[in-house]
Length: 77
Image 1 (spheres, rainbow, N blue to C red):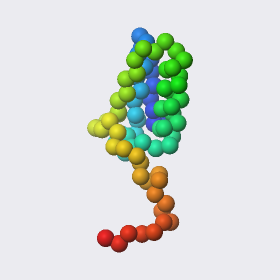
Image 2: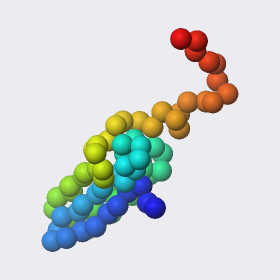
Image 3: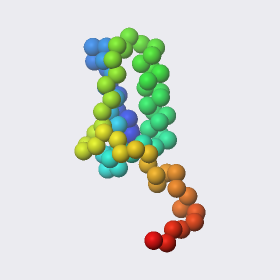
Image 4: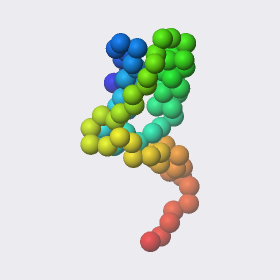
């Protein structure tokens, strides 16, 4: 399942963030795919780009599970 869904209708590009289980938290894969699709829009007859999120949230921000080192220091709360 792709983390970015993309379609074009009548010169409008529709980009949907597609990680609803993570409230569309942004990760490296999504960043690369989003850049690829936006570059594609620049070289075509796209007049508008509509970005939305799949599920309950548009985007909850950066996926911290991807940037935290599991072997790193632990925090005692």
